[in-house]
Image (cartoon, rainbow over all chains, first blue to last red; front, side, top):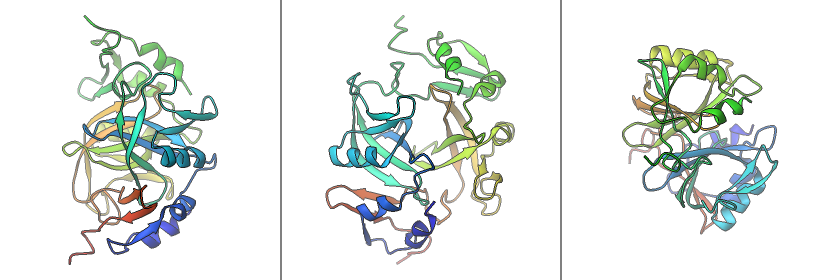
Length: 143
Length: 143
């Protein structure tokens, strides 16, 4: 991991700008060449999903403005919504202090989750009762 | 990964409840025994940080209500804020559709980021100029 680079820039003056290509080269992709991506709805601020990008997916996302991940199960680039139509348009991207996580604000078309729910985090922990609630799927439970 | 369990519950009726201990046993901890955690401010919905938990950190977080991670660099449990005072109180926890990511809503005391910034995602990508802006650190740049 190349944390020393990100440590060196953490106290730069607020107006300093860095080259995007330089920063991308310094990102701490893991041993599989992947970096975690948190995807958040730009309007509601709901965290929609979590996925991974390799460098190619990142470059393609930045070039096209369409969220493109690396599918670990299919082992290929995954343009979100290419089959479902539930695309994500990139509005803004931020990088964390260690250069090892990306946060993307998007405009979501349709449902972010493969189940048809608006977001993927539909299992709610109830600490008091020590239970987990499965939140309603509006695509399937219309009663 | 135990995705089949999470596939089996994705269409449960909305009021169905599952045992928290059963669900935790089914979580897809990775080959290092870790699961990604997204930590979000419960009021502003700002994504504060991203970290990892092992099963012990998860159990301790659920038992105490204080966010407790696994520090990969120090290889030990990390009670957030134990040295800085910048603690995080767990308000709610959700699990994603694949059972391999946790989303925690917290009340943040002080700054979430080790740099003194409110959150860790202070490097902003500007696609138009192909530059990255280092956002101001209010703890260090007071002018």
